Structures are given as structure tokens and as C-alpha cells.
Length: 134
Image 1 (cartoon, rainbow, N blue to C red):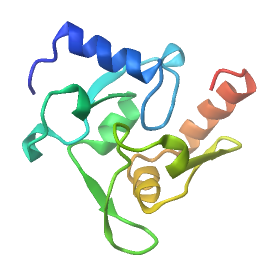
Image 2: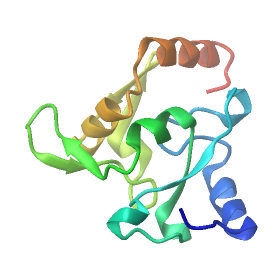
Image 3: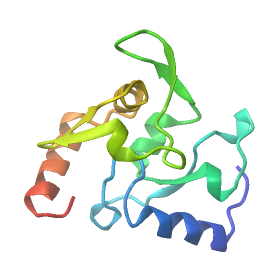
């Protein structure tokens, strides 16, 4: 993995406003350190540049790995993941109670592969919502 300079790291962190750019989990309440994530992995030609980096919680980053997308569970079509640099979160996802619901094919593959709605993630999200922290 290419070195990410302190300056570039700060740009990515500030742009994310303290939240995972995929699941919107607030970093202030995380037990594990958030990470710089290549939206398009280096092995697929992705650059270590602001336009290709996201701030991700360890859960989203591990589940995504170097994948670029997956098969849409509804249509079976190969579909890219939600891209936080080029797409708006609220156009692809909706928060209902503690569940993140997909609104688009990109949303569906992202919710499925990054496992946004695992029971333990729902429980954490529900607690944060109850405390007005999500």
C-alpha cells in the first residue's frame, strides 16, 4: 500500500466530518481506529489521491476489501459499490429505525457486502440513535 502523507490524511479525515463514509458510523464512538480506504484499490489501478480515498470504519473497510462491487441481490447484475467521492449518501440509502435501507443497485450491493445491518451493527446504531449521536 502506498504511503498516505499527513496532509492527504487530514484532507480525507476532515472531509468525512468524523464519520465512516460508507455506513456513517461516528468515529468518536468507535472502539477501533478508522482507516484510509482506497475506493478503487491500488491493485485495480486506483491512485492514492484525494479523489480515490475515503475514511472508513474497520467493519466497512474489512468487508469491502479490494472489491469494486458485487452482484446486485435483486437483479443479479454486476454493480459497483456506492462511491462516496462521486455519489450522495442520501440518494443511495435511507435510515429507517437503525436499519440502513438501500435505494439503488449501488446501495443494495453496498448494504449486502459491507453488511451494514448485521445484528451487532444494528444494536450499536440503535444505541447511538437513542443518544442522538448518529
